Amino acid sequence: MTTTTPTTPVSPSRGPGPSRPLGKPFGGSKLTSRGIANAVVLIAALYTMLPALWLLLASTKNADALFGSDIFSLGDFSFARNLSDLFSMDGGLYGEWYVNSLLYAVVGALVGSLISVAAGYAFDKYEFRHKEKFFGLVLTGVMVPPTVLALPLYLVASEIGMVNTFWSVFIPVLFNPFGVYLARLLSSGYVPNEVLEASRVDGAGELQTYVRVSLRMLGPGFVTVFLFQLTAIWNNFFLPMVMLSDQHLYPLSLGLYTWNSAATVSPEYYPLVVIGSLLAVVPLILAFVLLQRYWKSGLTAGSVK
Image 1 (cartoon, rainbow, N blue to C red):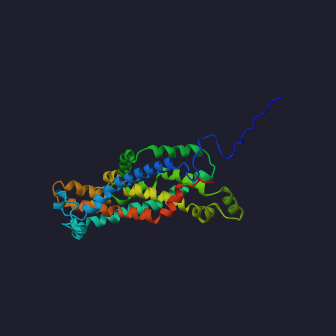
Image 2 (cartoon, rainbow, N blue to C red; image 1 turned 180 degrees about the vertical axis):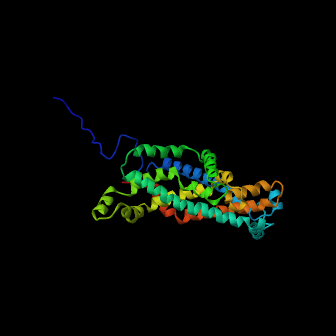
Image 3 (cartoon, rainbow, N blue to C red; image 1 turned 45 degrees about the vertical axis):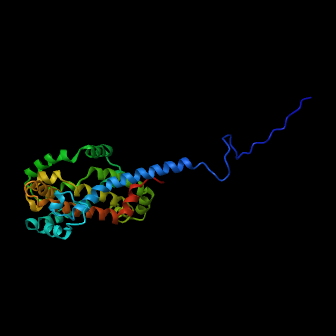
């Protein structure tokens, strides 16, 4: 006859790990890692904002304060004078450069986005011969730096007599391979095939389906492509430098560069370059702030099904 020793049952809610007092969960390490992550993000944000802070403060100083490194002093406040000199220097060239940049970037990004979204939609929704080969060419275009294409574009524009015109800068920025690639991804995430089939059953043609159904569903994706192209065209420098010799056709990037080069001989250009650079970033900031609701959703297209 054997004697069995009673054992204490183990509660299923208690694991084999070490016991801990009730009400004190293991959260110390999580809070510590979260605090470190927040500190790193804060330091990175401050580091990123330092150039913008310097630009904002320097735009309120005259040339003597800039050369004397008195950026953080409260005296020598010359923002209004710098602003007035900016738009009166060289017969108001800065105003012309600003209008040129708006035409190149805003109109170019709008038309280019329509082309990119239409091409990406066609690659996603339609089947045609050598489709993937053509799309491979698009991907090849994504990998080619724009500066490499500047000289061939100049030679083509020279042959057709388009050098030193508005169109020599405007037309090349309308075609963006990355925009086509991004638009195809956004089309696959935003436009279900079932919706297109239902529209065709209702008797709508392909163009009508695209304009009335697909393009509306691609709204956030269109804004995302638009902002990418707007930023790229607004910061475009090398192509205008190669194509243009008339200062009245310069965009802001090239115009401010010429003033900065002239500042080595004429120091009065330095405050104008600083405040001109400050005003040059305003349209991009406004575009991202006003359209952030759309481009944020566009960046996450297709991530959640």
